[in-house]
Length: 116
Image (cartoon, rainbow, N blue to C red):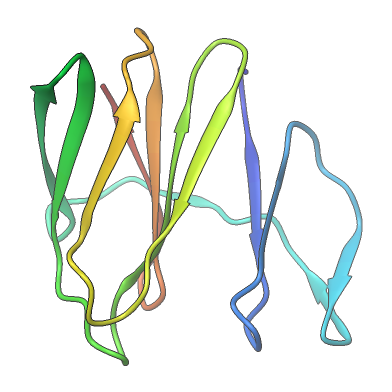
């Protein structure tokens, strides 16, 4: 997938993803596509290989007020998404897909992109 597009509802934190822009409403709100933040120094990740999977640790607090809501790993022909919740560890595991991109959504700072 060349350019995935993500939408997040500001009221219920519901997430939608697609490969093109579309008009979508949630909780009565018109949702806009999320822009990818370029500066991600406050949202660093550590990637290691565990049993032929990417094991990704996200250096981020996971409080009820500030947390990573989801992680999506986008490869050539698939998107794998893991929802994260406050007060759990900020860790995800994805099967290795080379030339993939990882997208993280912070509920306070928005969407971040990483090349793995």
